[in-house]
Length: 331
Image (cartoon, rainbow, N blue to C red):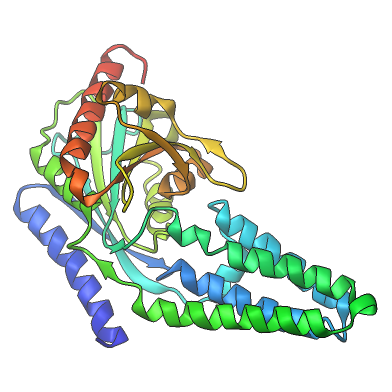
């Protein structure tokens, strides 16, 4: 499949999904977004730039160290759920986000208690934090490059050359890996649970439930960022909680801590809401970290293919708890 065919396939999936939801009576927005196709591109470019800077450090150690430090800071920002400057050097692609608003006519009341439930439009196979684990490679490479450059006078250029070659090889491997990373709308348990609960849910008028299938890469979460920023006037920070359904190859769990650079606590309300289901907790990095950094209260429910039934029960319980919290004025 060519790049154009793959892009048309992705567009058709989003458009077809929006049409099917609209045909079933839902109020649907199909939002076009500009997003990064995969976080591997950012990691690969960082490795290649670090390779060049490390090699150049043989002749210009000070300038090389400054560049490596800047690359390290960019990588740390990306790994912390932010947006590093290297990412801005990569050409973005067109993607889509599907948003399903309530049918009760209150979608434009930002002061109404709201539960936003998201899932990725397509899935990159792997646990939710896998995309960001690759950032360890350029982090380590930049630190080794800085150390090699600083000690040039003691041990000569050999460490710089070795580190530069290792970084270049890592960048090439990641570029190649980008070609065979599989994305699938069918093998996506988070989306399957999302669709099941959307069709099952009926508006109660107490808590507004907004549903969204977000596009963009799972590592950078451009789709969720665009959704929250563009619709902030309809899903305000003070009245909205965000539940991110994330496909996973690991056990069903709720994340209680996001990020491994500067760990942030997720909204404990979600864990309390599903406490009687005895869902285990975990730590990692997922889309909820992006929402938390932007100021929303959020948490992630990790869903494996063989645990969709329990995941549906958890989503149902969270929606019920949201209605109870509204009645008790604890939202």
